[in-house]
Image 1 (cartoon, helix red, strand yellow):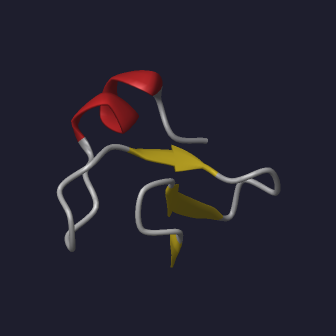
Image 2: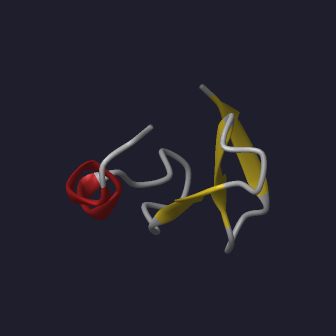
Length: 39
């Protein structure tokens, strides 16, 4: 599980917006770009 503190500092490499954990908790989604970064 990714801590909220880490999520607070992570950003999308493309647009630099915040990312959120997806529903299945196996990736990070940039809601602005709609890109998924698998983890």
